[in-house]
Length: 484
Image (cartoon, rainbow, N blue to C red; front, side, top):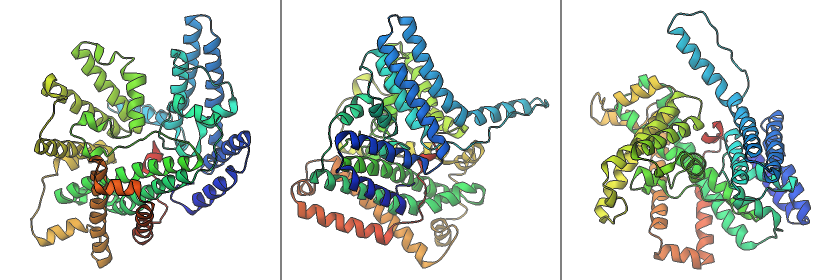
């Protein structure tokens, strides 16, 4: 059940319509049933995996709290890690590792056939396994007591707005919210609805309109040249932002309308002045998860510089692998790790937090954005060979003339509707970045007017709704991060 489908709109209308008329415990039971119904709309059997993760981590956490020795606590933590990461490995990485081993064997002309597991990747498995793992680790560290109400904990693991693509919530933030009765609030309805509309704008008007061009060029790169690769790479940067940030906005907005607050997952990442800053603005719930549960336990920046830089590279390679079972994602993660390592080597310590001029900030934003776009090539490419072909042909321009430029803009069609769609995409990307620019600079007349005037907000939302209806792509395209 996709957020951008009629089925979801009907589903959420029914859920919200019933939810606020129930008593507190009835709300929790109903919300848990709705969350499982939402997840089982993809494949009923895979709900069993959520049940296993939920029950194992619920009992492990209780055992951790009661354990009277460090050794028992470690064994219980190992059980949680083994269960959750074992499920993740089996469904997401088994075939990848098996195929990689087969490729290695083929180099020596040996007769061996690696096994293949013929199963579909469960939607959202990387998200809910990390979410429940963070809970167990928090209890192990003593950062929180275990949740004794199984109903509340099960809802924390399966809460439908953020179940399949985040944000990856922390138990210290989300779990306590299930212990308070949620009543209907008009302010939450309106602010949540505004976020949902903005999410649909990012997904339907920007991401899904850019998708066909990106898919065409990256799907068969050897049929195109440098101009196509440059445009498709920049388009993909905005496509993946619109797709994933759009999902997060819808998730946060839907949860807010029901009375729950989810963490911010994107904070205008393409305004970052360094790759380091980019990772404090992009997929914040994941980057902070890796910081708190991998980077800091490895020693963080408390180690000597060489070990610290190795930790950075290791975290980003694993982060890349988390995104998908393909060497392209490993290369993407390694490239971002290399950016950060190079940044630390090249930037004097005293200059990292110093103030810069407005012009220098613009230069840094431009450089950072282009470094990120370059890395997106590896993220989007179907294989490392395709990525390498694109990278080595970025400067391949057969002829710079009107005919070539027209072919770059419209690589597989030439009708007027495509020209207008291309122009509208550029215009709405500009609108999106203008809105982000206003938010980035905070205190200005338009942001103050939005905060103070209900009439202005209503007018903006009406305009936004009409833009979505007129220019949105309603083919119910899946969200990119569902494959992770």
